[in-house]
Image 1 (cartoon, rainbow, N blue to C red):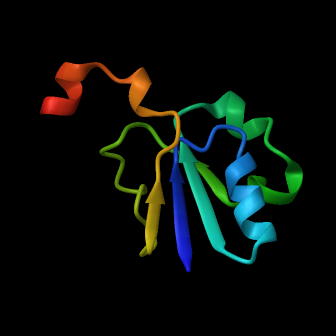
Image 2: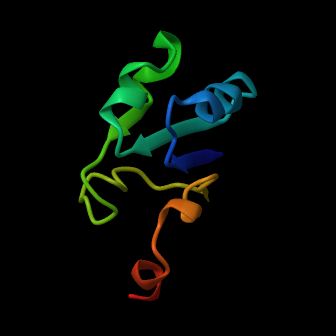
Length: 80
């Protein structure tokens, strides 16, 4: 199963899923967070510029997880 963690921050969820043998990847806007992720899984997270970034879906995913992301978005942005 392939999983994408949208808003992966320091890649902890990606790391945990990989321990459980999932093909997990993450994307985040924060260069700082990805740069400070555990070295063992940093390669599985990429930095994107926006939710419209063409590199966002380089792969086909079975699941998309977006934990602790939506509370950082404005309601008007979600309506567009």
